[in-house]
Image (cartoon, rainbow, N blue to C red):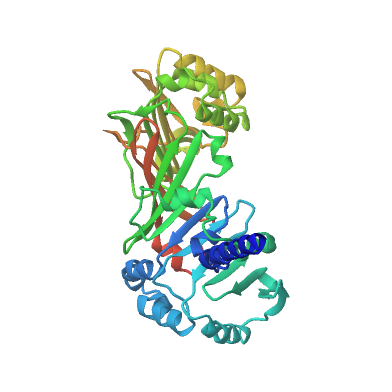
Length: 444
């Protein structure tokens, strides 16, 4: 009898425990959030596409872009609603150095996406397949993939779709990657509508911990605001002011640098020092000698034309038909090229090294840097001037660290806005007319 009572008590306790714990034992596992699904990559980012459309509308209408209506806030919002996409939420995107890129768009009604895919198949040839009961659509010609579930749509271009799709489709709740946690918790550019973030391993080679870019635009240019955080403190800082050539409208390439370089030359182990040495090695440039002699100011201009007076011999006849050779001068236009840099007591040694390496040559009283036009040289108070015209171009004093360079025919301007111990802020400007006009597409 005692055994029966004991058994009943045990069963009663077990039943009570089961009833109490049942909701926890059989609790449905919460579905992962969009943020839980996001895969790591060299570059990651987010975009509030509707806000970006609103910000860029003025730029599109000012430049009379033919397809501007298709990029308007109203049109994009209507298309999102039509095909079940929640474009009021951020779109997340990522990219790898090798070329893989992808984007994850949040879905409000997955039943509408199928209609969008049907319309897509009427424009391009799309095939489909099943992977783990998930339908995958592919545009084989461009290696583009598309798949979706009840709360996300994944678009991908590249060779490693299966790898990234596995991470996205099999993600679990609260398994957000540390990289995305760091990015989404980042304070820099927190309120911007388009942000790109990277902590790629390749950056470490240059001593950089992370870089962040944010979009900005006006009617004439598209710009990226940049933030760079170094692993250690920079071994250089901005100067108060330095000498530069004055900028002109005909400038195609330009560089102004004004930094205190003393500490950099004392730290040859610095990643930036090492990078400069590696780059210089490609043309046998004596980088170490340059950094030893350089006092931190450098200005370069290329573009337009400069005028020189060139001598020539002309044979003339006198009234008795006797020939006489007369030296005359004529104005000749040459490519505009100007370079200046400040040095210390080691400047002459650096110049001699350039001659020894064949990077600087002298012929008929003119100097050449490799394939530059013939140049005049002038030295004033340890500042070396090289210029292709007869007269040295106008100079000015300022503290700007900026430049202009050409990328596939597009003139891009950059500016170092501020520099602290281990942080730097800058801006990259891309002209709008080159982005949209002339039937040309801008590609990096």
